[in-house]
Image 1 (tube, one colour):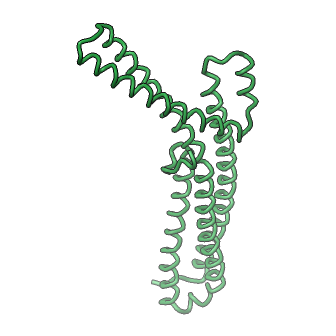
Image 2: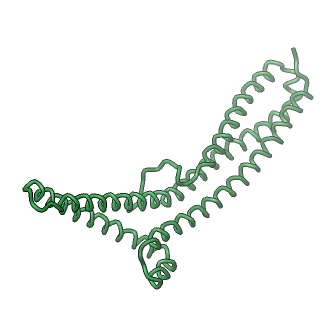
Image 3: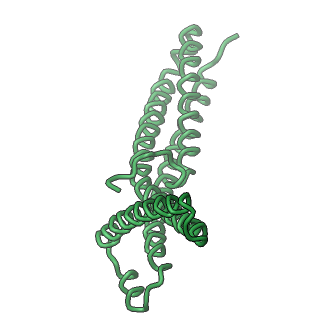
Length: 223
């Protein structure tokens, strides 16, 4: 079994063209995906503002929330989280006090008061959880963007290397026709690199389809 120069020329030239197309597609898709992440970040900021707009504010207060800048919004979020913690501590103490009175067989309405306080306590915890999740979503987006950019650099670097290698091997096609063993060895090695490049390519697409919300990151910044 032998391969002539035309086979090597056809194979390596086809691969080179395909790799050039993959590099272009990967770059365009990455730019598009990063733009979507920017919009996702803007939407998350709006969701955080909506969190405050759902409060029983008057029209002036609602207009003020809508005009909040980035720093003012996150300053208010810190205040809100501290207030929630303070109210949770207060209600915990009140529940303990009511339970002591209940054990002492005091007023019959104490059980209702305890149930009401526990319901308010649950609502506060849900409110805190909702706010923290929105913050984590927002904080994940720039981290996810950097991660995608790093993966894109690795992908483009790997595909570019394989592309240049295919051009080099393309030029060596006449030599491989004369030396079958070296031709087959180079072909086999190139297949391995090409397969690894294709895996990187599809891995990048799979990762990039995630949203900032789904990206696994436990950090919540300074919040």
